[in-house]
Length: 436
Image 1 (cartoon, rainbow, N blue to C red):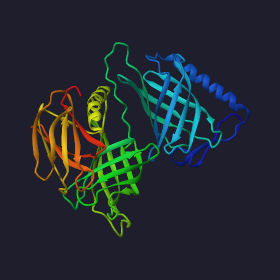
Image 2 (tube, rainbow, N blue to C red):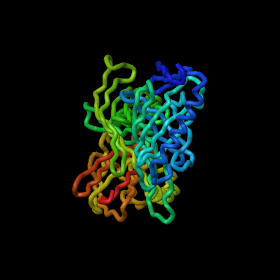
Image 3 (spheres, rainbow, N blue to C red):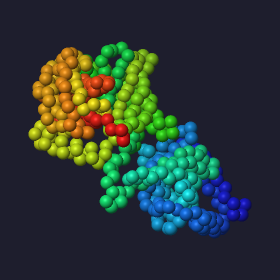
């Protein structure tokens, strides 16, 4: 067939969504064709006028239409004027398979065109050689490339890449710590057959595994579950499935093995995962021992450099005195500087004793928490305020979990904080800012 390129596709675990594109041999003309194709792509940019240098390291992900798999993807572009030679690297989420490629790229207005030329490593099996047209978005401290990719014989999809950079000298720009779907999420889990909520955490690792942590405000204590998860970046849905109980404080208690699909959204100061769950009692299945279903609400703070610095300033004296770590779990926004904080036990009253600090000042000392809502009026004296729950006694059910509400006169926001003798849960209360 002379110098034409033919591609065959077959199911293969090394390729996106189970598809692997393989080159058939096309003889002695292949090196020449690749060289000519590279020259064409290098010449094309000279008809455009780029406004910025896109050389450097970019990283992000790739998805495929109609498939749940997400693939880690990164490119390194060398300085080249209007065209950028470089390399790319793709990896499955579990890290089991990966490949690197030679590529060329050029800027066409506000779009970067990328073409992978050949696969560098491993020699086999062959992955798709991707062609992408990405729109450029610029932010104070990072750039984003986002758009569609395709390859002959492969299912096309979305590509998102980001590059972080330092602000110009003398520019006072606040650095946002890049938020990710991985890491620890904190919130609550409800169940339709009871009137109290559970403190609930999930910790998502980069290999699609992780753990959940749940605390019962009734009998049962607490437990860790091993889990697996997948994230669909197109529809912004996270699916999780608990696999087994890894450890628990009450050996006689049977926990629900839970699974669900949570919708992802980004708000001003937080990332949110929210949705429904169902499951079955430990030792049974959905048919023989179903659990009453419920709702999950989880969030992760969006941290800025200023917030981290303020948190660090507050943590140092507190940790030095109490010998405990502070874990920032939630962010609340209020409309007024004058607020009322209420504290109570939303589950079984088991003798929890708590001390509460606001911005390092003790505002509640050794309160024995019960069903009565103990109210404290406070005045916020700064934009970012840190409320810390310090467990003095864990009561009969470990760890110490209490319900806390923050009422600014417009609405009342209720959360559950968890603390033990090694860690103190914290919430940041932010005064409303129009510029956010």
